[in-house]
Length: 177
Image (cartoon, rainbow, N blue to C red; front, side, top):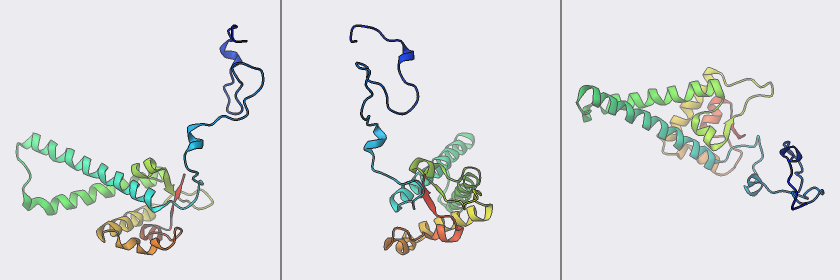
């Protein structure tokens, strides 16, 4: 069988037990890269590490957009921002954070950071999406956690299943996809 050529029609396209290239017997098992990764049960509560990764990615996105806005303003006006404008800059960052979080939660049920960390907001059994109020409250809970330097997460340190302040405020805990 080694010397003869086979057409592409001889190879399986569907998932399942692939055929061996050199015999007519099916291969006992094939390991994929997903098999080597640690097991993550879909629908289980998202661990704090995944939540932290998602928050860091979302913060990096907001800071990148803000940096692009500052560079664009400098290119357009030729002036650099003054320290006296720090209050306005903080307000801009908060508004930018709100605009990057709430619409993404409404439309997709997750932010860019959540998508990268493979977590999503848990919806009720009927499959209803997160409401605008719940998305806003999740943003406020995340903001409160960040403003306290993470001290608000002390409630979750003792138990893996304890919801974070954002989970409690929104009523939608984060789960693994």
